[in-house]
Length: 286
Image 1: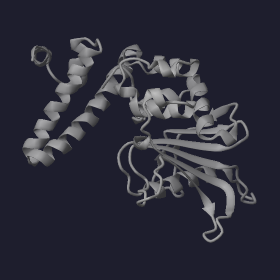
Image 2: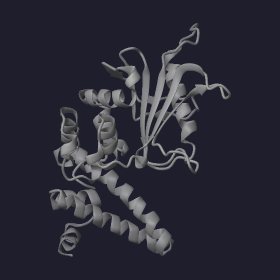
Image 3: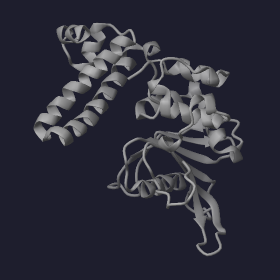
Image 4: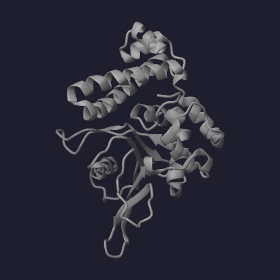
């Protein structure tokens, strides 16, 4: 846990890109990913959607919006591997379709885009095929490749496969992908990202600048995520029971030290991690 919010984490992403006051950042990001839309403005839509029937599963999107020309865009971040993510994306696309149709309509609906920023591989490259990190899908005829309809579009971006360093960044799109991959590890803004849009992004994502309650909620959730990752690693390496306990303890200690290094006081660190102030003081001495 570094100085800045992890924008690949649900709460971090929604805090930055799901707010009306920050929609200029979302417009900039989407115009880099979907330049064909030339978005000038957008309107946020309620992100929770009921399924096709009352007993159907509800879905909550990370961000759901309509552009100035009526195009609907769903944006998702997903770090943990989802073996059925393609099917999930199709389900997400079906709900905006339902939003767009009324009784008596002729089944015409505006274009729908599902944009997913992923922390896992959606496709594996056959040997000899050039590796990419950005995939675009639509509905096409298998033999000719002709597009059946331009109403549905899916863009999957495997952030982990984007490997450029800050010195290699050329376009704003590359700079965005770098931020999604690295922001939570950075201690300052790289000079290569100096521009109005990224200066604003770094200002908004600084953990110490968040309201105290938001700091606490964010750090608690990130602590839980780190605990889970450490439990998995230690359970694998040390045996289940001993590993889970060791992983949880290690995760809390690492989080506490990172928070202290970023200038947070011991009382707040204690509240977020569940460690006593005495335990935290002992960690500082080690």
